[in-house]
Length: 205
Image (tube, rainbow, N blue to C red; front, side, top):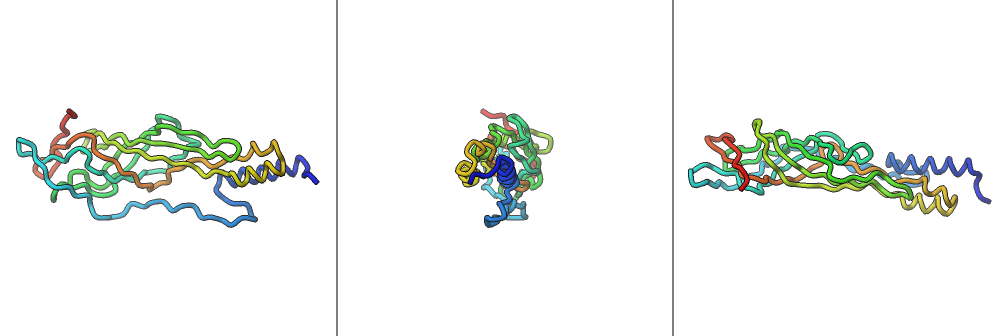
């Protein structure tokens, strides 16, 4: 016997709510959400000393800069072009000189995003890392990250078998970069270092 329209709508609401919140139906096993990557006082990034013709120490292009995101970013709220804040997770050193200190601020932006869709489709989002604030100077960075929410294909299939057209009401979850999520960026331009302090940013060739 087919369920009544009211029962169908009630079950669809339950499945859709479970998809967005990540809480499984009562009959399914519950899977805990992934833990956020938390910044730690890990060993610094250290590169060998390099010098230009004038004898200045140079932090080279493509030096690794470990970052973590400062606040959660979700595809159901973010728009393409929105910027978000990150922080340097570990000191970046050249020899014994700290060039990029832990806690320095960086900026990223949403490159692409799609919201959660019908038939259990999940949201997707891609971001790019743009720059670093180094003692008031803007240093260009390169880096990116992608994230997808969880699809809800099983719920969609069950709803399709039971209720047919009502399956379109079942959605996947939004893509989320949780607070503390780690990113790896790289310097896009060399940084001149003098007397143990950042002296200037050399213009890109």
